[in-house]
Amino acid sequence: MAEHNKLGELGEKRAQTYLLKKGYKIRHVNWFAGKLELDIVAEKDGWLVVVEVKTRSTDTFEHPEEAITNRKIKNIVQATHEYILEFDWQGETRFDVISVIPRGQSFHIEHIEDAFMPPLE
Image (spheres, rainbow, N blue to C red):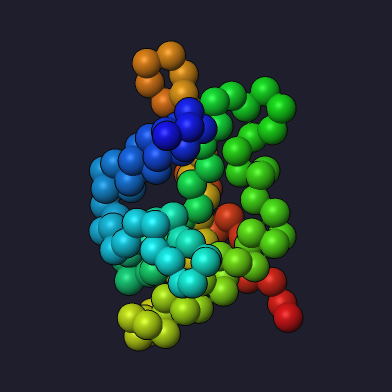
């Protein structure tokens, strides 16, 4: 496995642990709708929370959350629509971003709630 894939996988595991400690219930990890993927689908306080995890070895050039393009947002929203239909979700939905950056033996985690809204078509 390539180093960046290992780092990404480790970042997702750290994000899951973080969410669990904050009282979230993890519903699915790496859920696919065709070729579209949702990193983490969680639930808290009656909300479906779709979490995009961005892990970088450094934030020198850009913060991980800045790597989420408009195209990526559209893909996340489309996959979320499929998820809602498949699991008949009736509650509210929000989109969060968790950035994970290694710092020595630990990780810096930043959780941005309501990081973006679905684009208007």
